[in-house]
Image 1 (cartoon, rainbow, N blue to C red):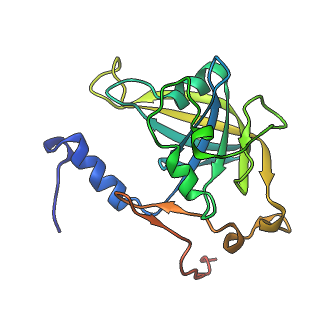
Image 2 (image 1 turned 90 degrees about the vertical axis):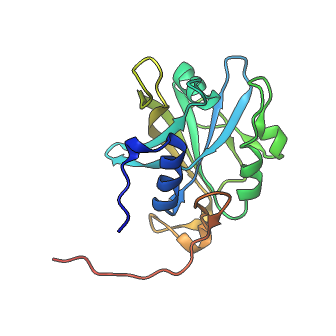
Image 3 (image 1 turned 60 degrees about the vertical axis):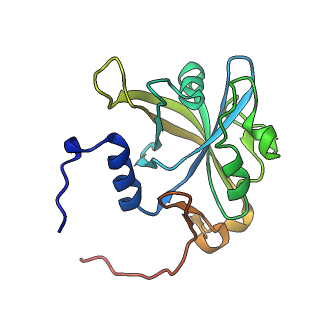
Length: 204
């Protein structure tokens, strides 16, 4: 085994080890509204389930040189966001939204995606996504960095207030994974599809 002390190497080197080890990672495609009404969108793979009662999700939004990204700033300001699950049919358009645009320009328009009105919150979702979850911001937690004044990320805890699901992927209260065709993030520019599925019975 190779033993590495993260304190003895750069943040970038630790980042490479993490994104190469914690794989595959689901991708949260998040829309938020800026104060001037511009619809912001961006993908994040530091993303997971927090709770089912109530349903809550976590999205970690990394800061750039200590500066908060539009997604975190908008979500904190408005208290709302829509989290979409990325599938094969939208992954290329979602990748376009990762471009660095000024806050007054919409990544949704750049990617040619279609905004759709949400039922429970003001932030629009994206019509092309098979799963979108309308959320309110439960909590935001600045974390990491060299000191409290310079956090490395903003951990957003989002509570789902409405599930919007494409009919073809929903069966008897469950999501049909093969019809969803989710895409996950690997390291570098690599992505993964669903691949082989297998089952193991849990111990009694």
